[in-house]
Length: 290
Image 1 (cartoon, rainbow, N blue to C red):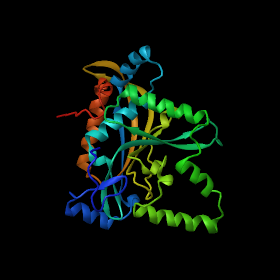
Image 2: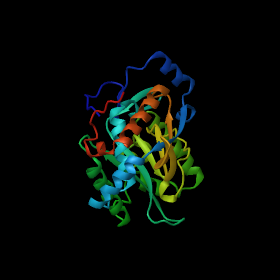
Image 3: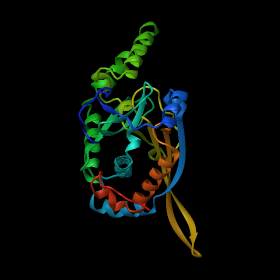
Image 4: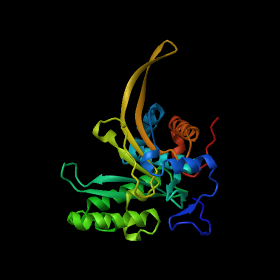
């Protein structure tokens, strides 16, 4: 996002938005918590062109996955729809200085395997090639047990083992610091709740896109769950053809953007899925749809 000179009221990681209308501000007053402003959308996206694109793509590079493609897609949508990169804190609206996607990764596919929070920065000149490379490098480092003991991951390991009489008041202090934007950097680093959007890839487990709640802690206003890609026979112009659909579950704080803005954002998402070669262009490429 644009790096402007820090002004009074800005936070370390974001700038204060001063273009908020009266109705939006009153909505924040009526719903002071993010969890009270949850807006959930479950959408079956047509990914037929993306599936065909990935089939050709994998002949060239079989290490690029659907998760990489969807991550690039979400990055493009947020760059084109900047209100999605906003959040509400202490009844003020802010916009992140950067765009970051995050997810929780299991070290191994076992019930008791350790979970690690992962943050992926999205740069303006990124595309599906560079972003997939960055994600793969992070995954490799974590699976090789590198960069696992830093930031929020380390803090959670320590804090979670404390007895209730210590842990509860400490968490309360952290929540106060979070509300006022003064949480120590060590607790923000690699913290998924301090990202632009959280992603959960449920398609890996042959599951659909589900509702997932947002949290009142942190600065992340939205969560997207990616469901399994399913084949479906449909009838078009008296002919039966094979199409592919993917269920997405999107939960977002309605206080950062109205329903019309969200609908237009989903329409942009579908447009890119219909034209997947756009994923090879710069993520900040301006895309206009009618």
